[in-house]
Length: 289
Image (cartoon, rainbow, N blue to C red; front, side, top):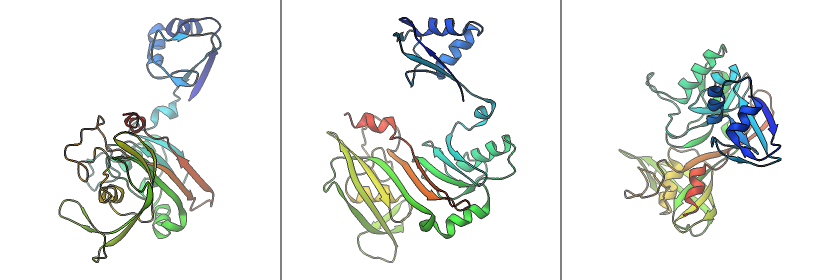
């Protein structure tokens, strides 16, 4: 992004201020920028009559040609010649065998092609369609294979945040059960039934009248693990159509589960990398209810 910054010298509304600072730019173009690219004291605003005060900082971020090629269905958090770390938006599949499905892999392959990179995206791990957050994607089969062969040795910390129904007691603990595949969903047993062991550590960060904001760390990576284990605790993830309440009346229209932290040792360079994304604003609004 290219950034221009201006300091307000006298009180006035935002749009006239932008017109005065950008006399060589057409008014229609200034209005386009105001819709998406204007920040006041670091906060994005599109309010044309926003009341500016003396000393405020107004910045305009313009997308470069490289920025315009970046995909809209996910955010590229980190990229080098070997791999990408992306922030997947909810509703996007991680991977599908159907070539017509839009997935993280198909979106990234379009990006890699548009930027003339002679490589393809390869799955390292997956997130559920309706879970948002940080994902690793290799740019070669070799890099993807390195993660598969030593996942626990390479990935040092991976955490989620969820909004769950009710107040969880105790507020910190571990859930341990054995998973088997049912006809429509994952089944969980508190005793060893020959299934796959799943272990989740949880800690409540915050509570409101109806909800708990929970941080979760996985010892294992089973399908739907967090969603199943919070159901086992009788505090399912908010707006979970499979493992949650059928009469979920929460005022959000998404699964409240987000992969917010990812720490790993780069399998090629050996560099230790740490990435975090903020708790989604929809989650925080629920905590005010």
